[in-house]
Image 1 (tube, rainbow, N blue to C red):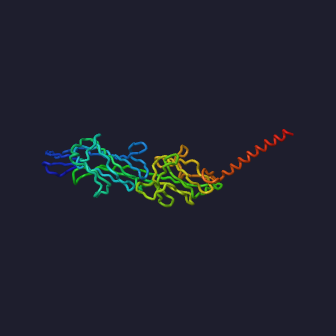
Image 2: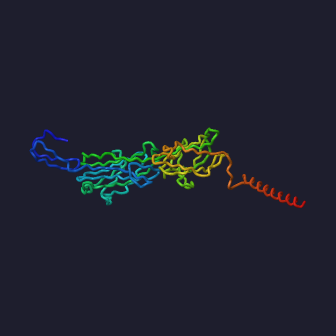
Length: 350
């Protein structure tokens, strides 16, 4: 920036970084250097599986996600206001704390504002000027806060963004740091229930399944039907939740809103005339949403296929079922043994 055509004399120069400079020279050409630097802001989000903070994470719908925005302050700080905007799939919970150079900042030094905002932000943190006046070059302010992944979350795709920036400078002439953005992803898995008719895969209706993070199928995940064989992970305020999915004539269903993790799909009831699976099917969702990737197939599968074979499962409780055949068989074996002994005795007496 340059000022030209000025008359010789005395001038007071003010900058958005808080520097005041008195110009009292008659030299027609003067160069001034700003002594205060511009602050910066870097936002990160926590990956729950590792505890580490970075540019992205993944989570279940309904899960709480933790964020940190680190502001590197500069001397001469004026009117620091932190802005954060969350996408529709994230619901702001709270600011959990602010730390300056490792020491907790007293809440009286800032105000968290969530209402009456005019710049499309989700919330702001407005720092008191008395706090700004204490800041020195490269002081580090860490703002910690949280949000919940809600039922409007984007599944896979571009993820769910959260963007922050710091506004600073003289009132009426403020500027902002460049936006800093994180992405929170949530994933889905497609399932196909079928049997083999020769080489043809035939969809099976009336199979029942639950999804769990336990290998024995216990504590199944609560789900909400979205229609068209799509289910999503339930949130705390959802009603009419289910834990069991029943296949229709297509044999297909989709579960949305899952974290990258290991899951177990348990068949709780098989269609009439088919054997129920003895063990749960393991489903592994990778950090990029890839399902059941292997060394030979790093791109994973498009859907998890569940094959059922026809047959009858022996009942463990209730009526006699096929147990009667075991009883009759045992009687025949015993009878044959008795007959053999009698014949041998008759032969020996001759």
